Length: 127
Image 1 (cartoon, helix red, strand yellow):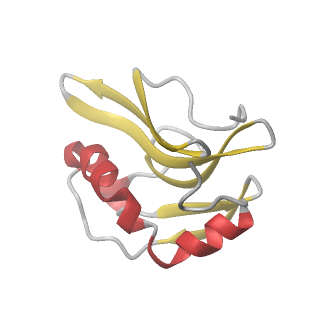
Image 2: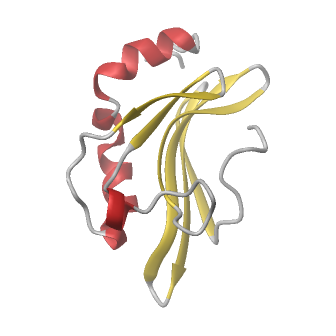
Image 3: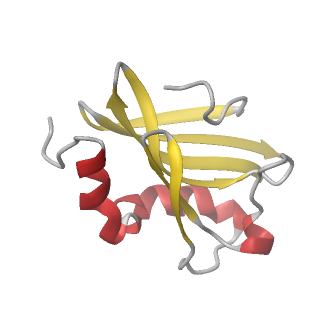
């Protein structure tokens, strides 16, 4: 994983999809309310985990995103650089977003899935 990714969250969780892909979640709360989060798909590439798709809420940073004002969006990365932003997601309550996104993640990638796998040389059946 590169050092430019999300850091400093109270809790982080990782779910392995297969040997070359995983979903990573970071979450920080205050009095049981979500303050910031990320949910991202990562592929193993060139000796480290690289983000390829990310949802996030982190309004207190220079480039942060506030889903309560701007709605959800999905950042799509190619070769470590932001390539595309998908914004056609329904509104969701902040406290529900991390769990909801984790649950719908495979479908949320939508039409970009095959293209992303080709860019990063990862096959859906790669185990």
